[in-house]
Structures are given as structure tokens and as C-alpha cells.
Image (tube, rainbow, N blue to C red; front, side, top):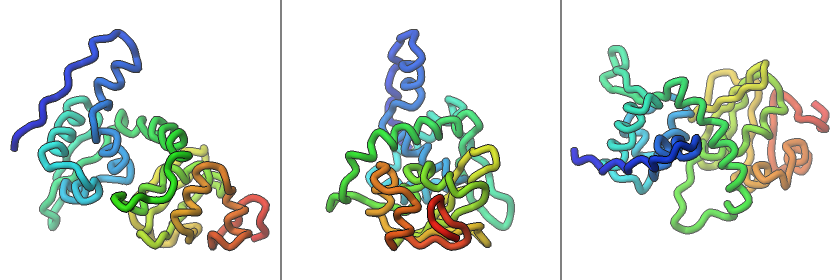
Length: 209
């Protein structure tokens, strides 16, 4: 499979430049976004990264393996596929993506006619809003699909694509409300009180259980 040529280093003794040497290529951080949701097969990655060519995706994954950001492993029988997953170093990029998402949220607006949409793409922008619910697993359902957010006792958060068995709480809402929560235009308590979101299992601050 032909490889996309790797961009040369910026050759600058600067932490930001060095970081961009590793993750500044087109698509790399979006591959990270997908793998933060859990191990993924190549075909699943390609399906959830509309617009990326097979050559580009293969090249980015190879580069990420070489940089120690991702690994590939074979699933045990009876599965016959390999999956890619982030290394601990790769998972350290979650705060970077959270900050980037917070910075970009005000410009999100309504989806354009050409925009693809996946439910789990709203996970990162919602992490702060959902963290107030306290430790546990929150399953989020949108018309576009489901994802879940895991909130640890120490305040750490992670997310995964799809639903889970017996979550601690269930949130149903829509993408417009997700955008309002991401920008801080709306709090989770306000979303529930106004009927824009339905929450089962726990009540957000300011809303009676």
C-alpha cells in the first residue's frame, strides 16, 4: 500500500514544535479522538473518519505506532481481526483534545450539509458537563447513536463509543443541546429542567432527584 510522505520535522528546539512533529499532521488528532473511545479495527476507523483515504489512514497509523502513540494487537479467537489502541503516551492527548474542542465549540454552529455526524464526537465537548454527576458511567443517547462517559472518583474521565450494560445514569438529548452544553450557554441542570434533556439515575446540581 503506498505511503503518504511524512512531513519533515520543524527542526525547532521548542516543545510546541516537537509536539506538532508528532501529532500535527492532517488527520492524526482525529485518529486519536477515535482511539480514545477504545480499541478500533482499521475498518471501523475508516468508517468513522469520513474523507480520509485508505493510504492516508494507514500512513497515519504507522506513524503513530512509530512515535509510540498507538499499538496494534491481534484479538484472541474466535475473532480474526487486529485492533489499534492508544498507548499511555497517546492517551495523554485527551486534555489536548478537550482544550481544542472547548476552543472550537463556539464556531461549531449547525451542521453543514456536507458535515458527517457521529454521536461519540460529542463526548469530548460534554466531558466537563457530565463530570458534575460524580463517579460512575453515564450513557448518552442521541438520534445519531450512543456513547458512554466514565467518571472516576478522582475526577478523571474517559469515553467510549456505544452503550454499556447497566450504566449508573442515562442521558437522552440532541445535538443542539450538546452544542449549548459545550459552549456553556446551558448547564446540564438547565437542560434537564427545561426538558431539553432527560436524565435517569442521578440528578445534576440544582435539579431535584
